[in-house]
Image (cartoon, rainbow over all chains, first blue to last red; front, side):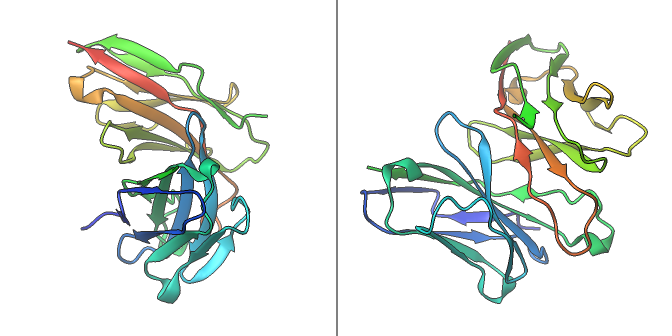
Length: 118
Length: 119
């Protein structure tokens, strides 16, 4: 079974440019999460999709960040325009629906996208 | 206030010895879950072990075990018989809240502990 995949693995852009990150969750996982880790800080939650709906976007830092999950499959996270402080590693994670009895709700992470804004 | 605290930024352990990575948490919710993830230098986050707040026994997964002390709000990871491949960053994380049908819950992470295994 394929794990969570993220594209690109690395991105270097200039301040003011736009970057779009993509996440493909594990097949059949309804829950999809975005997290990020900026240099020297903890991994922080950004938002959570259940299928195509945003369940919780309380962690989104500002309106320069836009996440979508069309059709409830893959998700994109767009940063427009990018600022220096957006540099960090962006992780995507997915998990199965708790109705399936998975009370544990383990989130499986992708390898992350390393974003550097110059 | 920090919800997840990992007080050891870096640790060394001799190969084949056991090591304990500390994690304390803070929550007023009676239902929660605690997770440990490993992040090797390649960058991916690998799920290691889970402990639910209502679980009566400490979780174990192969060489990994979780020393869960509920009253102290600690969930330390114990790695037995360390191997060179165990060198990595280790993150403790918590999911707060009762099981919710359909929707999951976000994870809150600690700052991580970098473990280095010496040959």
